[in-house]
Amino acid sequence: MAFRARDLIFLVFGTLLTGAGMAPSAAQNAARPVAPFPVATDTRVGGDDSLTRFVVDFSRKVDLRAFTLADPYRVVIDLPQVTFNLPPKTGETGRGLVKAFRFGLVMQGGSRIVLDVTKPVKVEKAFALEAQGGQPARLVLDLVATDRESFMRNLAAENRTQPPGATGGVAPTAAETRRGDTRPIVVIDPGHGGIDNGTIASTGVMEKQIVLDFAMLLRERLEQSGRYRVVMTRTDDSFIPLADRVRMARIRQAALFISIHADALKKGEGEAHGATVYTLSETASDAEAARLAENENRADVIAGIDLSHESSEVADILIDLAQRETKTYSTQFAKSLVASMRKVAKMHKHPLKSAGFKVLKAPDVPSVLIELGYVSSESDLKQITSGPWQAKAAASIAQAVDTYLGTRTAGTAAAAAGGKGGR
Picture 1 (spheres, rainbow, N blue to C red):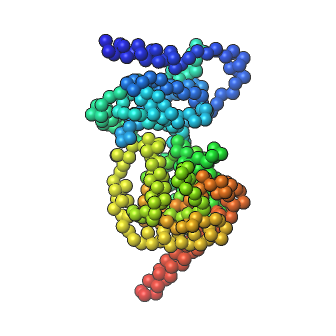
Picture 2: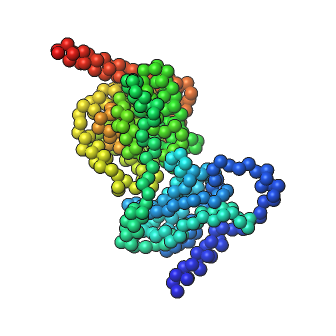
Picture 3: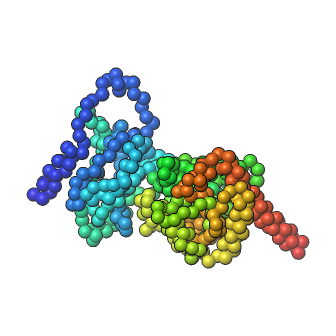
């Protein structure tokens, strides 16, 4: 009887949430171009803290897979690549069991919706409907409250049947690994992407786009010299898990890893401006560095990535962090970088800092994280979105790369020559 009553409530929710509409004419349908991907046009949440329905309208039917994650409690909906054409501030608030939700591209060919839920839940139903009767195609997700023990049992069952996730294109391409090319590899990592927007300026411009534009410019500047092979962790609005960004550099035996970001301060946290260069340290150099590292390290949680079954490589990375040589090289490059950028860019009053950024945890690849400036600062935002400033800043970073790798290459060559002479 309880189950039938629940179905009746969901039926009521469905009626309220799907609404009514008029079917377009045949002429209108014929004139409307077909989008390359399904388009999400609206979302609705209804229910209470015992059962909640989540609905998304689409231009055409989509396949979906829904699963749960713990600590914090989340529900993840994986989709083929879709275009999210949703109203501003969609997902900032929820209802019933859904506190809030976010959405975006997680890889080429794949999109994701992540729902933050108020307590342990069970996915009662998850299905897609074709467009019919004047209604758009829809994704429907029904959630019911449960206890933690039941939640964790369901989670274990999902993990046993869940197919392995994509690696985000970690393996090197044939062009990257062509034989005989001994030029050092520089990996450029535009932070955030896809479902993870990063910081958002008051103007609406997103960190993920600012840093991608700058990273593409830096890649062009480095490639112009012909001295390096440059690899990007992403070249579009895709989400790449933090561990995969590190793995990209390690697999390629990169000479340098440069992660590009843009910070922001919340209202009431004071004022700050200027560029900053970070290296890895288990102990943050100051409270601001600790805050920033904590925020950046949440990227995988934001995207709903389950890291509980991560490979042993991550554990190896944590152990190998004690490798002093790589840390020394990272610090050397960071100092050169600050000196070079200072000539063209406004720098933070303490431009060289350290913190426990996950993305810097490759034990065998010297790595730095560059905060171009603060999008919460009007003057910084104007600067870091300026084409001429970006060009000058990219050139200064390229100069620091030349200085650092030129010295390393010369030192390696000298050591090799000395070894041969000794024989």
